[in-house]
Figure (cartoon, rainbow, N blue to C red):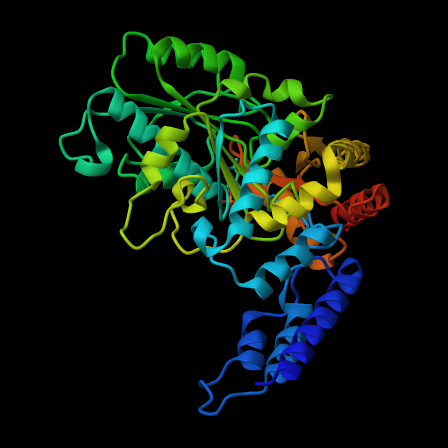
Amino acid sequence: MSQDDRSSLLARAAQLGSRYLEGVADRPAGATAPGKELRAALGGPLPEAGTEGLAVLEALDAAAVRGTCATQGPRYFGFVTGGSLPAATAADWLVSAWDQNGAVYALSPLVSVVEEITAGWLRDLLGLPASTSAGFVTGAQMANFTALAAARHQVLRNAGWDVEANGLPGAPAIDVLVSEESHYTISMALRLLGLGAATARRVPSDGQGRMRPAELARMLTGTAGPCIVCAQAGNVNTGAFDPIADIAAITRTRGAWLHVDGAFGLWARVSPALSGLVQGLETADSIATDGHKWLNVPYDSGIVLCAHPGAHRAAMTLAAAYIVADAAERDPHEFVPEESRRARAVPVYAALRTLGRDGLIALVERNCAQARRMAGNLARHPAVRILNEVVLNQVLVRFEAPGADADVLTRAVIAGVQAEGTCWLGGTTWHGMAAMRIAISNWSTTDEDIDRSAEAIIRVLEA
Ligand SMILES: Cc1ncc(COP(=O)(O)O)c(C=O)c1O
């Protein structure tokens, strides 16, 4: 392959990517090609002879229009899916072009320094102590895992046990308490850490999914020994926040480690109007969040923050003679489970630098106002019941009409909206009731997109 071939391939990829993005707002919000069609277009036996790179790109692009979900578009409200800011996407392309291994400073001074700068900006934005350590991982799942590994290290070390050296057999038991509404990735992290998903004690929550601090205090009364408490900033269904300041006061008295999973809700902290929801965050021992949700960084991007850099590093570091460490510089691998790794902080840096503090506040506040607008538009219809207090970017909707089974009707409306294509949203079960979940976390969503989507939902309901 010549230099020219490489340049034309990259130029074509940029063209195809741009064309894809230009059309994304006008395409059905969900994927329209079934797997069978995609397998037929792209599959078959591995070719013996190689195929031209351009032809491979064209084939992928042709399948992408119908085979991808328009998650980059302004009316994709499924799961909690951020779009990607143009500068973050472009910076991510650079990351691929550079192909840096962001494990240690010696492998890429740039990556290490960009991580350091980005970590500083995040501490500033979130109002966290300057000593807070940061790791850039694949998502909130790995951020939760890394944070809880640091927690496991510290609470066992306090009990005189070196878990990194000796593992868990014979270790003092750790009392883990999670909200009954905690995200399942907390359970997965506990499972991977050998702490068990089912052994965690589940603290009751209120009608919005917020942990009840009084219940936590009751469950901790009279207990001693290693203890970890997991709170949540932003319930995946309702957007509700556990009262972190109250929970922190209780965990401090008990000498427990407090972890906060703020996969998307954490970003409320940047807005003066919303930061009260995340009051007390600065006292947490560890925090997990995502870049690829509300910060609108492309997949995959997660961030772990830890108030105890020593514990964070101890849980993640294992020295090897050939890994050159420069004591004066920061080695990113000391804060994450991976060794060789993509330069994940670079698109986060690009997102933060292009938005600035004001831009990020505006993005978060706009999406929250749009969630209220969506709830208001839908609630005008007599068959619509909004199940949550719309405190953030999540709207939980149920459809109830005389003579209809509300679960059946709600699931039918969700399926109908997905097929209709104006917008895409998913379903859930909330307190035993089928419900539609609407999550608004895209920089390009306009109020007009909200109104158009609400009209489409009502049209499907009435049909
Ligand atoms: C509260 C919470 N925690 C963790 C996660 C997992 O995030 P990820 O899929 O980025 O690992 C999510 C995803 O929606 C979430 O809402």
